Length: 267
Image (cartoon, rainbow, N blue to C red; front, side, top):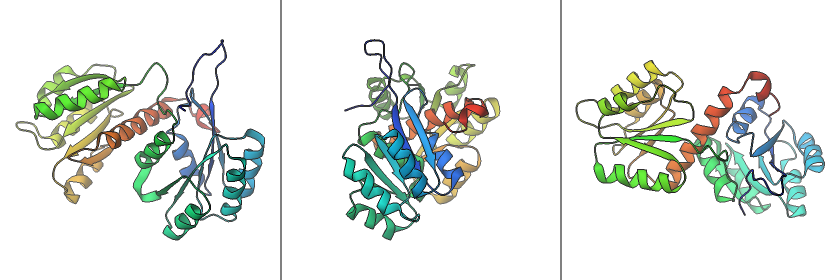
């Protein structure tokens, strides 16, 4: 079942999500991947607060750090109702393993970042894209077959796609308005490499989201790309589902950042 904003008999419903993490900043970051027109997110910094919110709102999805105090009692409580999908997210492998034995549906290491969380949320059947505006994608790669494959895949998923075979072509075709847009750029391209393209893109549009792709697993290149403002760094051959998860996070985070600050608080 896909949970999404749909008008049915004139009634719109938002999926309720509970996030329980003692680091409020991290909880707010997690909340940023859930578009506000699809989801109503409740943040808690303790298991007790999480249980109160769960009793009050009956969330369909819960993202919980199992390393916090009394987290397993909260997981047991949510599991008992049979209505909540549980994602355990922690930096501690032992806590994740215990969460698995207590019935958590998905386990995620915190170091894997938001795209991994988005992948788990989507695989659980929750649609992370805002209805009616799935986003625009510009694919920049000098390999025509790969470029065509990504455009075909993403177009079938509802994205508006365009492509370019070089950095120069990408810069020429870039629109003035880049909100809800993601650029997928290969690192190794002739004439203008991906890092040079990234610098030009970010100088024109500092908030533009750029995801870099490369067939070479090089820590220094990855570090440099992130320093220049890349949102993510993917290794070829790119797993298309993982690619879409990264795009979903990028688009929802972009939407979140563009909201007025008072709408982000308690989103």
